[in-house]
Amino acid sequence: MARSIRVLVCGGGIAGNAVALQLLRAGIDTTVVERASAPRPGGQAVDLRGPSRKVAERMGLMPGIRRRQLDERGMVFIDERGRQRARMPAEMFGGEGFVAEIEITRGDLNQVLLDEIATLSAESGVLDYRYGDWVEDLNQDAEAVRVRFASGTTDSFDLVIGADGLHSAMRAQVFGPHEQFTEYLGAYIAFFTIPTPPRTKLETGWVGVYPVPGSVVAVRPDPDPAASMAIISTRIPADDGLRGDIVGQQRLIRDALAGYGWVVPEILDTMAEAPDFYFDEVSRVRMPSWSQGRVVLLGDAAYCGSPMTGMGTALALIGAYLLAGEIAATPDDLGRSFDRYEELLRPLVAEVQKGTEGSVRLRHPETRRGVAFMLTLMGVLVSRPLHPLRALVTRLIGAKSEYPLPDYASAATV
Image (tube, rainbow, N blue to C red; front, side, top):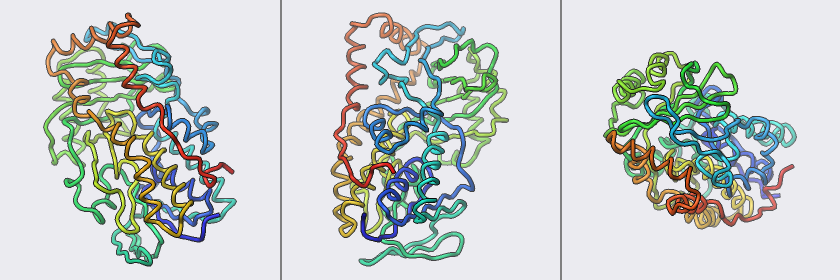
């Protein structure tokens, strides 16, 4: 059992809830503040593979994940006439490919964590969870971090963990402005629920991907056959005015996709009514250090690789496991805990972030000829198992599968 310290976690997403769960398991008094008034349901599908799956197993999350995981069987590339040009089943790369064996919506994975936290906090009594609140100001010294919340209350903590995402307010308060650490990679991404267009003709569990010049449109069927998730990414120059402007965001999508085929017209017709419309920049976060004094960053706040890596959730879970384990191991030397956390995780982060600019360009051909080449290439990867390009893709995907995880006694499930 670690010595009695108090930890504040800013952010009730996957990273924040994962680290809170592991801190509770170590007997550490933990407070979580989340700006939203309630958990956000649904959302983009995320996958668990390699080291992130091992972390989920060690954290005892797999039973809950299995109950909620999506029935995703593969990915099919589609042209403008709705013809299937290439089918990539989930098992093509040993369950570690473009569609992984275990896929779950971000909201459902977060709920699995919240369920575990609720069970554990009822037994331990060392959790304070606050929705609709956030840190307005803080100052720290050698003894503590003193915090003033938006609710007007004040409190003191031994350390503060900023797990509040790409646009981290904690990072801006303690480390510097957003622009100092983020790099726009040339695209925006949106996803939202739509009524399933009759013309999708997607089989159960198959994600349809339709590339067009400068953009990619994907449709993921939900367990409810009447609904689907539309996922759209598009390459344009950065536009700061889009932040918070839903009308402008949807106008951008309409302009980028105007005149294209498959089920694009149905998606655009129903987009304005989507109850869960989400839109954000595709950016990467790079920082020389993830900690300053008694404040440390976690997940996208510290090392977002962009949605194009497919590893954001993986890094959030792995980082939470490492950070909580190191804090529990040396609670009397937080500097050592933070140093070990960075030492262990930075090599994986560097590998994940490598080449993300090129990935954005490759996924968004700018011409019809480029789109045709992409579809042909996907067909080759599917039909010729011994093709050198397929071997290269296998190596690139598998490079992130092996990662040595420390075994923390404090991380054991209850």
